[in-house]
Amino acid sequence: MKTKRQYVMRARADSTAQTRQRILQAMFDLHEEKFSVGIALDDVASRAGVSVQTVLRHFGSRDNLIEATIEFASELIGQERQAPAGDLAAAVRTIFDHYELRGDSSLMLLAQEFTEPWARRVTDNGRKVHREWVKEVFAPQLDQRAAARAEVLTDLLVVATDVYTWKLLRRDRGLSRRLAEQRVRQLVDGVLAADPEGTPNE
Image (cartoon, rainbow, N blue to C red; front, side):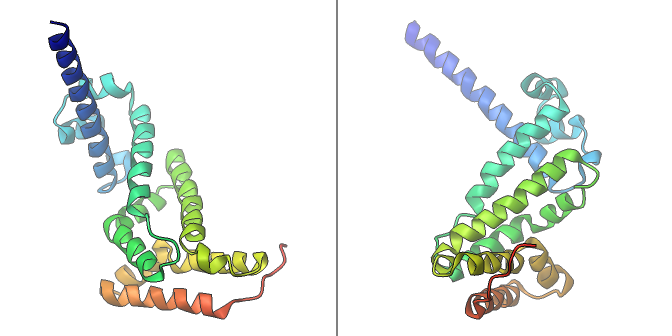
């Protein structure tokens, strides 16, 4: 009897966790399709295949759901952007994989950063995360430089691999992924070959 009761309790816990995951995924997916102001709890519930009452039972409010979705998205995106340090081709390929999947929704998020306080927090953190990604992925190349030069190179590599650079090449210029990826690799190679002098802080 005890074993059966434990099984039932575990099954209920698994079901609850799966429902929560579906709701988070639904909220995340909807934010990739439209501005936050246009997303109601009814939309989230419908997408997740649950009732609004179920959404509220899991998260309590729309604001709480947004906060939980931010955490959910951070973990997912962190996994998508993992690349081996020092491998330039893998770094560019990885960031393009990410932008091809999330680039348009990232631009949509950036368009909301001055109207949605939570969006500004996310984009500010995203800038920090991207800079740390550059430092980590290009560490073998940056560690060979003096601190001041490494800081300049980091700035330039951040620009070369930024979502706006992807947008300029893929969306504005309309280049194929292959050509756009080649352009970014050329930027990266050029930045590392230039080895610019460090500039004093102003």
